[in-house]
Image (tube, rainbow, N blue to C red; front, side, top):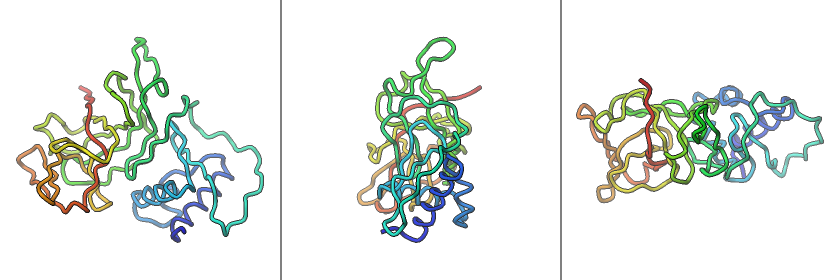
Length: 247
């Protein structure tokens, strides 16, 4: 059973795919559903993926596939061959990566590895906008940017990249404008620096501390205060495993 907004978004994506051959942007989906932020679109897409209505294609920006429509919707007629999406040829697909907030499609190994100019192995990871290293901000953006990462930096699992905004983690060596590499996962050891989802709406980069039945998100800058939440208000979205910096 789909909610009204889930049904509305699924039908909009299906119509757009049949008309153009590629999926709509998050901005187009936000406008079509009259939502105020893209975070609501990400939550709706996640719900549709979990229910088996949508699928993301690996290593492709704006690449949603409608797997099925609700039972009360008539089957789609055969459509002409769609117009090719404006995207470069994709590497071989890797296992789909569908975290609830920050999205990516990568599994280290042969898939996704390319050669740079100096013939050293590198991996293209999706770059998902700016994440707060101060007060939490919306960190979700359209999945149109990529960042090249040395393959040796990745040990296994599914990864994505985020650009840091703010200075609350500066004493941990994480500065405004840095690019952090995150290994996707919903658990982390006490004291790890994590991407944390607060109240299903805000995303922040902080050190995780568990204190009894509470969860503390701890900055690495004395100018900021530690924020403490109940365990049901914070969900780990990934763990910091690397950092890139441009000078």
